[in-house]
Each structure stands twice: as structure tokens, then as C-alpha cells.
Image (cartoon, rainbow, N blue to C red):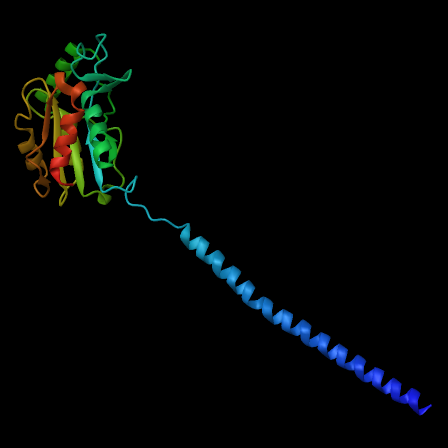
Length: 239
């Protein structure tokens, strides 16, 4: 009888020890899971931070390439239209093409200076229209605007030489935008007059900007083969 009581006591003690051990094991397991939850939360925050980016300008560049270009529509080839070029079957204005070549070299953002009123496509009509605008000292209304001008330090400014002067939409552009503190680098396509005095005019309209005198002037007849000249010119600017 005494032996049975002793055995019962021993079994009860063993059961109690087993329950205590089981409880300690569960407590230890719950404590070990806490660092994993914290690590997962930290990792999620880190991934969220890594997905955030900052932007400068429309394409992350501090260079803007603004240009005015009117491709003529009459004629059947590039030479028949004095202000257009055909590249890989695509018809572009001369200055539009040069602007794209500059973009390839600089990675800058392109901006087309466009007017609300469309210009004539015929060569003779365009010449007459441009002459009348100059005679009237017109300021054609522009169709678009630059919303992030402060993001740009350097502005390539392209235009055709019309009547030995800037096209009148360039006057509108330069009078509407304050380019103080920026570097303006002109480029033009022409029929033999080069820049005329247009670089001086730009400097007069933007007196607080640095206007580069070593601009690029390309004859309209040389535009289709101008890639090498543009590459060398941009490379020599040191930007």
C-alpha cells in the first residue's frame, strides 16, 4: 500500500515537471518571434524609402533645348523646301533636326517654341508672312509654356535667320521668360547670312543672362549632313 502511494507521488511530481517544462518552451518560442516581426517591418520601410526618387526638370536634366522651326510643305525633297530636312523618311524643320542632334549629345530636354497661329507651308507665302510680321514688329502669341524653367541652368536656343533678324516668335519668347543667371547658347540655320546680329539682340533682350557668342550657324543646304559638325561643336563647349 505504501509502495502505491510512493509511486503515485512520483508520477504526480513527474507530470508537474513536464507541464512546467512545456510552459517554459512556449514562452521562449513567443519571445523569439518578436525580432522577426521587427526585422520585417524595418525591411518594409527600407524598401519604401528605396522606391522614392527625386526629379529635376522633366527628364532630370539642367539643360533645355528650345527651338523655333517651321518646315515648309511644298516641294518633293529636302532641298526643295528651304526650311526642312528629311531624315529616315521623317520630315522635320531644320532647327528641329539640329535640336534633336544637340539632345543626343547633351541629354537635355526639348521644347518646341510654337505659335497659336499656324505659319504658311509654302516657301513664298512663308517669306511674305515673316516679312509682314517684322514690318509690324509683331509679337505672335505662343501656344505652349515652360513650367519648370527654374530647373535649367543652360538653354540652347535655336531659330532660323529670317530677314537678317530673329523670327518674331523669338521676341515673344525672350520677352515672356526671364532667363537671368542662365547660359544661353544660340544656334541657327540660314540661307547665307549666318547669325547676322541676332546674338546681340538676344543679349539685349536678356541682359542678365550669359549669352554664348560661339554659337552654331549652319547653312540650310548643309543641315542633312550636320551631325558631325554638331557633335564637334557641342564637345567644344565643355558642358
